[in-house]
Image (tube, rainbow, N blue to C red; front, side):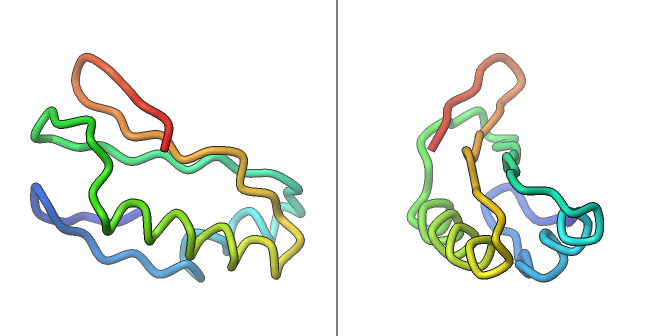
Length: 77
C-alpha cells in the first residue's frame, strides 16, 4: 500500500481501512516488512499499531494482529 525507506514509512489509516470498510470486513490483520532483517518492532511500529487499532474500532473493525516479516522470519506485535 505504501513505499518507504528501509527504516521509515508514512501510512494513512484511511488508506489502510478503505478496503476493509468497503468490503464490510469485521476483522483485519496488518502486515509489513522490515527489509533490514530486524524483527524488533520500532516505537513507530508500536504507535502505528495502537493508532490503527483505535481507528479500526471506530469503524467497528477488530484488529486481530500486526505482523512484521523479514526475508526469513516473522513476529507479531
